[in-house]
Length: 355
Image (cartoon, rainbow, N blue to C red; front, side, top):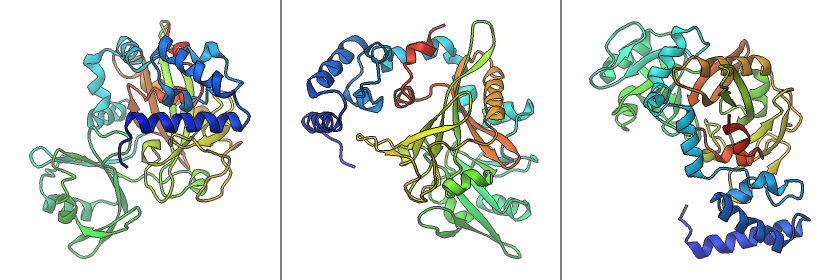
C-alpha cells in the first residue's frame, strides 16, 4: 500500500469525522476540538483518536486524556522492564528455553536451524538442508512451523505439513499459496539465514478453530507485576486471523476483540484499518464472536501471570496464549506490547502503567 502524504491523511481523517458524526456520534466540531486537545495534552494524533473510538459519546474526555503518547509509553515500559533484560524474552530461543526449564506448557521444540550453530532438541547439528531434512524424516511431527528468533507481528512465520517418502521430505506449505517445496528450496528463500526456530504446530481448541481455522487464534493477556510482587492481568483481547492468513496479528489483517477480564466473554471484534470496522461474527466464516465464552480463560490468565513473574527484572508484558484441547500454551511474551492495544480496547494506558 502506498504511503499517504499529510494532505491525504488530513482528508481521510476529516472524512471519518463527518462519517462518525452522521452515525450519531459526537459532532464534527466536538471531535475536532477533542483531537486538538488530545494532541496538545498527550501528543497522540487523530489516528489514535479513531483507534480508541474516542468519537463515541460514552467515552469521557478525562479517559481520552489519560492515554500516554509513544514516548511516554516507552519511558514507562523501560521503567517497569529493565532494558538490559529485554532480549531475554525478545529472543524466542532464549525465551522458550527459560519457559521450558520452568515447566510452562510450550509447543514442542524440534530444532534451531542456523548455518553455523544450529542444533536439534537432542543435540544433533542442524546447519544444512540435508541435516534438517534427515531430522524431519526421523521426527514424529506431521505439521511444523518456522519462527524467526526475533520476529514480531507474525513476520516470517511459516507453517507446513511434512510429507515423508522413503528417504526424502516435501513441505506442503500452509496459507494462501499452498505450494509444495523441498527443505532445500525453502531454505533458499533465506528463511534460515539468521537462524530459525522449528516447532511442532499446535492444534488449537476445536471451538476456536470453528470460528477461524487457518490461524492459531490466541489470547493476548497484558500482565503487570505490582510493587507488592503480585502478577495481575490488566486486560486481554482475543486475536483472530482473516482471509486465509495463517497468523492472527492485526497488522497482518487479523481482527481482535476485548475480553471481559473476569468472565472471559468476548466483545465485538474490530480490524486494524483506519475506519475500524466492527464485527459481531467472523467476516469469513460467519461464526459468532460477540458473546463467545473463551475456553480455559481462568487457566490462561494464571499461566500468563506466572510467565511474566518467571522472567528476571520483568514487571510488564503482553503474553500470547494459545489454547489446545488440553488447555493453554505460552506462545511468547512481548515486553513492550503495542500501545494502540490500549486505545483499541478503550482502556487509558495511564490507568495501568502507573504504580
